[in-house]
Amino acid sequence: MVNCSGNGTCLVDLSNVRGPITFFGEAGITAGFLRTDTYTYPILNLGGASNLTFANLTFDEGPDDPACAPYQVNGSYTYPCQSTISINSASNIVLEQVSVLHSKDHAIAVAATQGLTIQDSLIEDAGVFGIWTGSDQSSISSNISITNNLIQDVESNGIFLSFTQNTTISGNTLQHNHHVALFDVCNGLCPGGQIDMQDNSSLQIYSNQIIDGQIDLNNATGQTDGIEIANQNTNVTITNNQISNNLGWGVGADPGATGSNFRITGNKIYNNGVNLYGLPGAGIQESGDCFTQ
Image 1 (cartoon, rainbow, N blue to C red):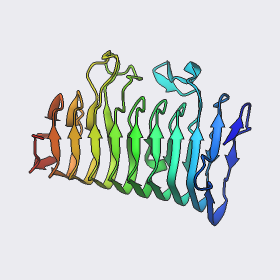
Image 2: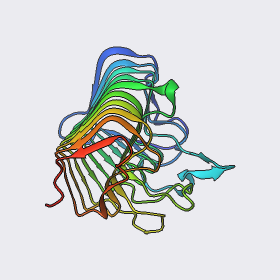
Image 3: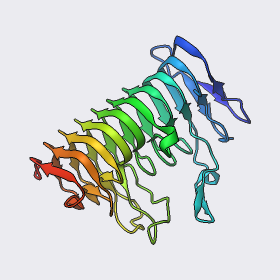
Image 4: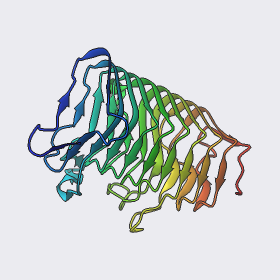
């Protein structure tokens, strides 16, 4: 591991680098970066990069730093620290057998990227979101695959999927994410889902385990959901998932959320606070799910 402290000392800036290139850690050792302070820049910056693969690497962001917590100014949130991996306006990026630990903002932040695979990796204890994918129509990403990962103990959503086209989320385990209520915009602190989705099209979520969601301090206006559906998502299928032991909804739609060609079927949804919530009238079709173990 490369231990680094101070401004810019951990930065791997691959802006506009064109591959094909593979960066990989030696088998049998923990290779990568350990940063212990100065979280004002990403460790891995892939702005404008293409055809790059990263394998068998660890990005460890070190001990807790309360100064990185998001805070509200005039109704909007400020994020004082940066995500560990930043992927913006890139294409054909692969993260495989990568561990992203103790991020102070998002573990992996993605925007306006065409072609991204995150597989066989670990995201643990991120300070805001585990994987985040864009904030508005100008940052739409497409052809994203999130497969066979373990995403756990993230403070807010394990996956906040927004403004994507043609995305697959499959074979992952999401456990005990959104265990902290960070945002105070719900007439109190907000609950939320281990997966949250907003403004996506052509989305498939299948064969995942989404389990053990709870806000540890129980200090929000609700509890942690398995899958939270915000507005608006089209051409979505959620099938063959186990969604269980979440203290909030198993699968639920936020007030006013709508879907189009949106199907929930063939899942095992059980032992949640409420298994299904808010789906009637939202344009979301639910059928053929099992509500017992």
